[in-house]
View 1: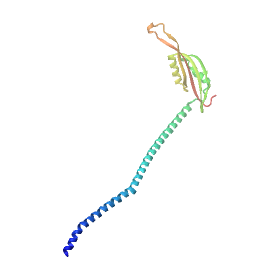
View 2: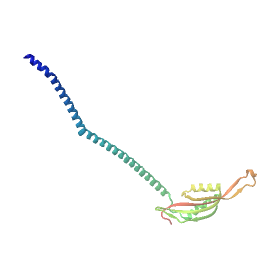
View 3: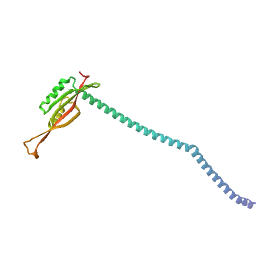
View 4: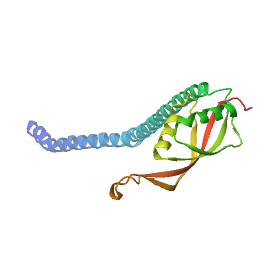
Length: 206
């Protein structure tokens, strides 16, 4: 009887061992299935959504950096605008109010000490702007290179310095010192000069 019981136990041992292995295998497969399902239905969507968030954050940061760059450029433009307005205001404050044609004639008459042979002086139509106007004067004269430089220096040192436009210079003759040897002769060109002197004034003209 005891022998028969031991014999049954010996036959059940491999079966129990196989069942235990099957149970362990099923448990492992079940765990793997749970992990796969968790990854597919829960973790994977979260990871994809996280990637979308990261991408959106990156785009937002780029846009923010671009906006900050544009703001800095805008501030720089505003600063330059203020500086330009201040410069224009300073220049405007230095413009004369009562400079008329007679004053300009007197200014140009003071060039008599300079070697100038004045040909003509013509007052052109004034050019009106919002807060100032320009009185252009067409001035023609004959001089040499030294006289031209002296005249330009004279204009540069005027209290109300005009601007120069449409300047034309042409040589019309040559003076030479006949007392010198031909190969050492000093030559001086006579220049015919035509220019427009622009005088700036505050207000709206006479």
